[in-house]
Image (cartoon, rainbow, N blue to C red; front, top):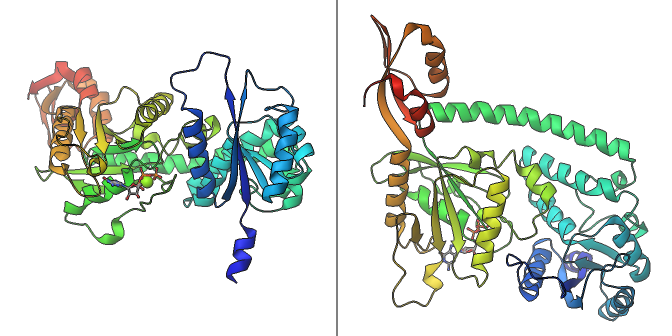
Length: 431
Ligand SMILES: Nc1nc2c(ncn2[C@@H]2O[C@H](COP(=O)(O)OP(=O)(O)OP(=O)(O)O)[C@@H](O)[C@H]2O)c(=O)[nH]1
Ligand SMILES: [Mg+2]
């Protein structure tokens, strides 16, 4: 049985283009590092990487991306390596794929397809699956006439999972209809999510979202954070592994602060450089948890030689999500692997930890506690009777248990978020 499985594994040749002419953007990963990451992505998708090459060019070739001569070289190289597919490090147009495929004669995919494929393999929740499918349809739409014969003939394997093989051939109209259906379904899921969110906000439990580059240690940290909660059981731990995109679904778990106050820790999908825009778009719904979080922990793998670029990538995605102005603590992780005599000093918004070894967790929890306590204000409001609208708004959003009808209005005890504190300041009776 086993060797049959092995036979099916794709043998991938990786191809990168290093553009030499234009001024290099500072947030671009070095081409060698980028290829190393592509290799990890290919492995995460289940392929065996049999070779890797980089082409230096002044600019990309309009028809063959890396140039026709190079494509011919790739063909010969693939034959000698017995490769079954070629993975390009950038997003290709439909014409590029078709032209290159015609010469090389085996399946050609790009980085975007590879990432979408990993997501399609890993998505577990209904919402996750819908989101990936939507991203795949959006990717395919402009390339409908570009995906060549190889794609349709192979029938299985990386790049063909998801919406299914036949769907590659359905016309644009069908794809558009399908995309509209998925959007509708996602809106339904979103409604449920919103209801849950309102309940959470009403219960006054603050939400702390763990975000960061893939493999930074977000899930490991979440598992460490939840251990002290009274309801902790091993089954509540989330999947953490040395693998890109180990996490795809957003998971919320209860954790507890030194003051015994509870908070909800949210594990999220990791980011990666050149993350397909369609995917960010599609995952916006899931990542809304991040937008609504009271606090963000930006988890960074401090041992990664590219950690600064990884941070920039994460910040860029957060900005796209509209969560860049959130209260954030920078968490440098994996310091157990840093050979330091003296650890850098922790600051109010920066902490150095080892999630795996549980180093400096007390310091992190203290920072979370401080950040969260700043975020809410316990107040007594006096709302005049003609402002019943405010009272209903507060009742919808907060846990309003203590209120009283008095002579000149309603007095309400409520723990306000900063944004509402600023809006309703004028009605404060006492703090
Ligand atoms: N040495 C060391 N390894 C760690 C630490 N934290 C996490 N790791 C390892 O890093 C790898 C990735 O950890 P995860 O927690 O899955 O990372 P993640 O950020 O959730 O990754 P994705 O879900 O793929 O985005 C695992 O092999 C962890 O064991 C740490 O503090 N020290
Ligand atoms: Mg994870």
